Amino acid sequence: MRFIKPIVLLVFIIILPEIILGQNFYRVKLDISIKEKRAVGKPSLTLGEIYYDKNIKKLTYNLKFPDKEALVVFENNIYRIKDNKVVKKNPAGSIIEFSIYNLCLNGKLAEYGLKNTFYKMTNVETEKGLVITTWEPKLDKLKKTFGKIMLSQKDKKLFGIVFFDPKGTIVGKQFFNNYVIDRLKLINRFKR
Image 1 (spheres, rainbow, N blue to C red):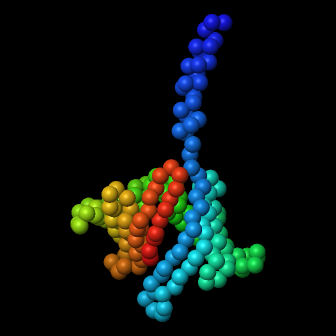
Image 2: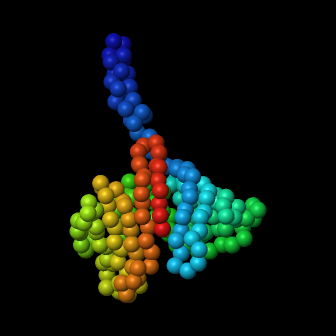
Image 3: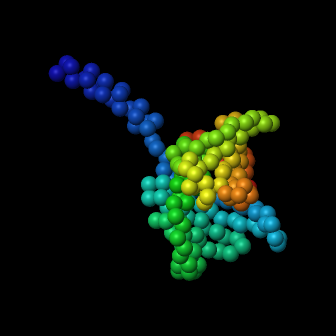
């Protein structure tokens, strides 16, 4: 009987830190404003909210401006919803895996999740306080379909990403500014 209290206390001391510190975050909600510069036409502005749940791998954009609609990415499809009705369904592949929300919640944002893909790091440079890495497809047959990707990091955080086609032409850019990641919040400003 006199050993029960010390054993219970020891078990409590061992388990308590896991209960307090062992919480894994699996959902995120963000208010967004996206300013997009287009090659042709006027720039656009989109306002709304984003919800992401990593357990069910569902990404929901509730857009409020310029049009009120929802985009839901779930089970490799993108659903466009207006007035509570699905108006369009498109296949999306596995874009959830490379969403910034999934990468952030899984601690892979800094390398954009490329470490465990068919890409390999082929070059590392430093320039003006940035670490710039170049990633290329591992297999020659993939190089005919997929171009290289260049990532820049500042203070060990993702700063920018540039996508190329197989011929070396830039097909997309994103810059990630003013974001803070801690256990409770993700504050960001992302530019395309």
